[in-house]
Image (cartoon, one colour):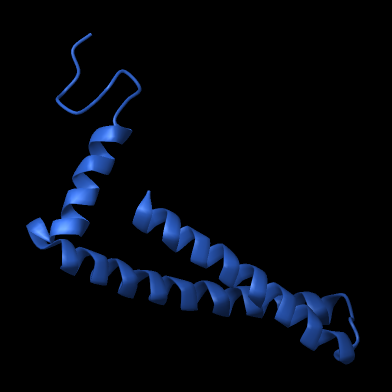
Length: 96
């Protein structure tokens, strides 16, 4: 079976990674602008996600009648876990 240049029998991933690394490393084809646009989009997306997760957490606390003393701990835990998830997602998108 014939594959395009840079693609092994394993698939498209090698060629994509090679092209993506060239764009980020050398700045060719507007690579710097692409990374900045990705950052801005991801920050907006992250703020949207954090807002809605906090809103749902608040609704859960109200619905389950969780005491006010525990709200701070619940929100802190949820927010830390969501920030970790969003950070790893950003790193995966940027470097994979």
